[in-house]
Length: 196
Image (cartoon, rainbow, N blue to C red; front, top):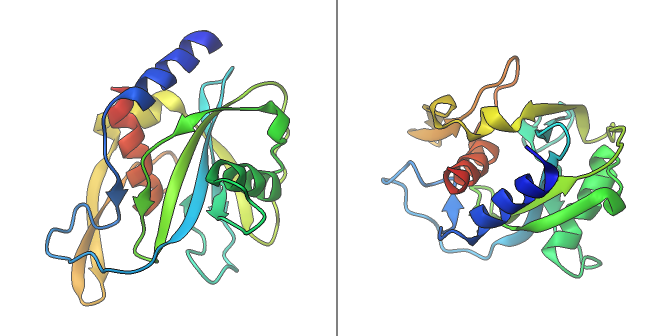
């Protein structure tokens, strides 16, 4: 697909109706707690020419979510004027992505995590040459998944495990050796639903 066609398809997907998501979506018995959420943003970076999505494997040394698959991103700092700026800054820091080759298409509705973040997914096309550089303290690996794989509804599974004394269900979208689950898989699932 040509880059202009892909951009148009992404714009059309963002224009479709759809609400916020959360880590609680598949767990009707869990009451979503009333709390102040910390604003955060992640970058769904699509390599335009390759039609792949950039993901990271978090460092095993991290206190929160060690070894999990994630988008580049994090909480909004006081120096970030917008959530888009936060996603771009985090992508520069975590994977060495220069902001000047990132074409932001828009944002998806926010996703609430069990850890108290309100995460805004920023959808963007990455144009031109880019050599990923992992920030060793946060990222152990940078890899790419074909967009076609992530847009296929049949690739999403619902799995579960015990968490805080009860069974918690969540989406997964496995790819090769990578077990993509939790908030990352739920955000990708919401994106795939809009693209369908």
